[in-house]
Image (cartoon, rainbow, N blue to C red; front, side, top):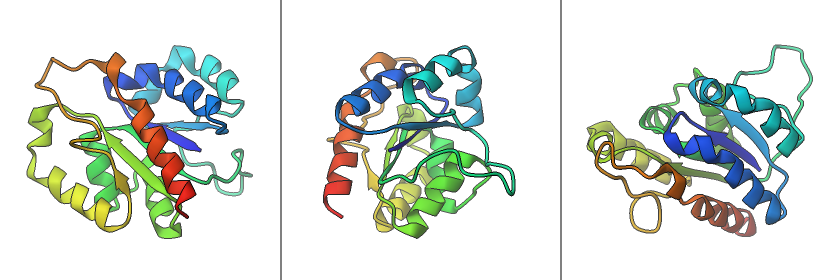
Length: 176
């Protein structure tokens, strides 16, 4: 499993998702957006030890060998407004969005669980982006049965429903 985290408060608890995924039998490779990497900078050695793989947040240099094994599924969680919109629009300026776009093209199962406040969720592009992703077969966990936004400042990052993303990853692979 490739687990990609974005700079949203639950990302500080991404080790919980890694451990839960490993307990379910997944080998996990962790990717972070540049801002999420900055938030977790002091914990990168711990996260690399936990996964057994380098934490990536940038494309590998041309000609360099791949350091991660192939994946059966990609999970983007927490996914910010920016990442959801960039994925839907194909704006591949970051490794996380670039790989998500590649996963769509290669038909690698892709699960996206947003995390944004209710103000951001009202942005008109957000709903269009969710429709585009769903139309491409992406399992988007937003709304009932997925992530439900809170008003600004009232989020509970420690309660982010990682298990829903992991359940969806399992279902996506099982359904192939």
